[in-house]
Length: 417
Image (cartoon, rainbow, N blue to C red; front, side, top):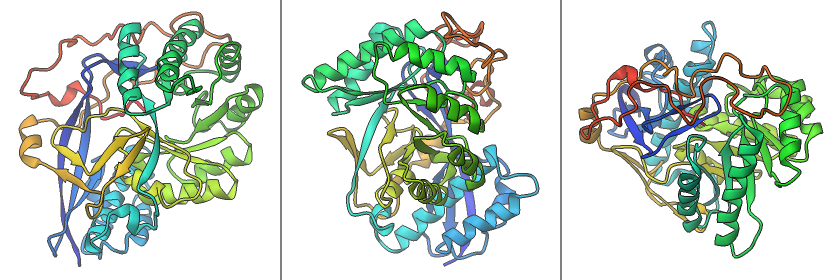
């Protein structure tokens, strides 16, 4: 079997509500999802969901190769990209191709990827994550009731701009999940998306902890700040989670050495091989691993095969336009199916008419870091910047038309994780 070529598509995720984090909000609730299809000479096609940046150059590392040599090809792609750097969107491109290769390899073996990787159980525990900072109280409660109806009893909220608002919103969601769970205490997490300084993070979380029991606080300071993460970890009761935006084992090492992480995370865009290696590194430090991402299908399969998987993030309950996956959500967990490979089906006839392609980051969205982010010391009593997430500043706040022909520059490729 040989790799013969690739095709690219770009679809959209329709959230039907504003989505975002402390850095900004997509007011129309539409985000872009690039798709890569890798073809072989035996008619098996693999699906990767992720970046198209520098795709032609990265693909040169695997063209004509046997896709079943997937881990060796992953390292070959890293070598092809090392001069320019394999970070950021280029790392996501490598991850998308890596995921497609794993899909091909499992399809060739006629097994679902979770079983092919050595998983014993198709059930992957989940927590709810609504990308919800732009929602009012009623919308917030309604959103988490939907998650609760699927059996989820843990939730991660976006926050970090206003300590009292965070307390209020966490309390609302706690009540929803407690009621759904028959009085059982739910798990609550808060994701600041790198919005705080070290001191602000400690003050903000300790103030919340007077009345709210937080399971973890996510990305309280910059992703690479090993000492800062350790300061937060030592200063609060909640666990510290981070790692979704790191792009290689070399970036995890200083964080683990400093003792700054309690929960090690990886993002769906990093690919399956990256996740498996990070999970092994975390396991060597007796730490759990937790995948994040809106469409983490590959990492869900991989999670079944590692001994230290904790829980996986569930964002939107609906798939992107033109994509289906062989999985269900029941009793607070992803239930993976038996379709060979990832179990993803791509309907090109539904995606092509969208006429969408990846574009630059929307300045009002979460892909652009606010100018004053991280420049406070106290627990913030109000918005961190003049870009309040409850009031999107985009001029096109009307939802796109029903035929979904969205201009390329209107939506960022960044995922508001």
